[in-house]
Length: 414
Image (cartoon, rainbow, N blue to C red):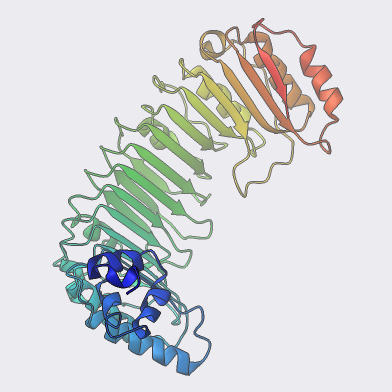
């Protein structure tokens, strides 16, 4: 008897759980003993990427429906379905989800984009599963949750490109998640929900994406326990943005096109780390008392005005990074106007300056020289540039010969 055959069924199931589901299922042909072991797998993952013919899709459909129905594990730890073939109609998906809900699935990840438009693939019994801890819905899925919803254990919810029945659907769903800690909402451009509300007292992490062509009136966010915020609002049309104060917020990633960011800025003043891209100014009366790490995207022509405001209102900034966000285009035309007074953090706390894609343009050079000239506690300045933008030797000479308030500042060029 070989070593593997001498192992218990429990250990064999653990070994199978490290294999892709398709490979684990294929072990059922090895012997009578192995025939049903895969049905005890706690984690299942299926996709139709190799389903190019109707006969293959038919076999996969039969296997999924029958396999989930006959699964023997008391709890399915995770089920991931990626379905893109039009052979899988919404009613088939609904049966799969119903079967998984009956098996007390804890983590459910569904990507469905095979049917024209958005389809309701979530059965009624799905909305009352207390076992669900993680839920991700992606693609052609229509949400029309019933009045009775109780996701009492749900901690992570990710909604990417789904459609909503009306403007109350999202908040009605969120109000039925009393333990929710992490939420991702990626709005589809063709969604008809012109305004939405996110009120979750327990939420700690929120990621919200609003696309450019989305026809929006505005949104409301009330998440007093939030620790991390990622907001990408690429819609430049005038719309309201009402966000309550987030006193526990530690980190924020803000990429916004909207012209009015006063409510947003007022809600995130407790952050220690802030990454921001905006050309809008927020006015006076705000202080970032805990902000230590500031990263600003410089793709906007007048982004330096916002930079000066942030530095003036952030007395504890230790690290400043000027960079370009992913998919943002920088034309090298930053406008720098020297402020009348030097921001306090430059004089008292700034220790690290990192500058990515430095082009050596006159206003860029003037800003870099200004910081070097006034930052008395600066320890390290790292400049990243490409030879096509500025000759390395000329850049080094210009900045190395400029006056520095800190005699211990180390200049690093990459």
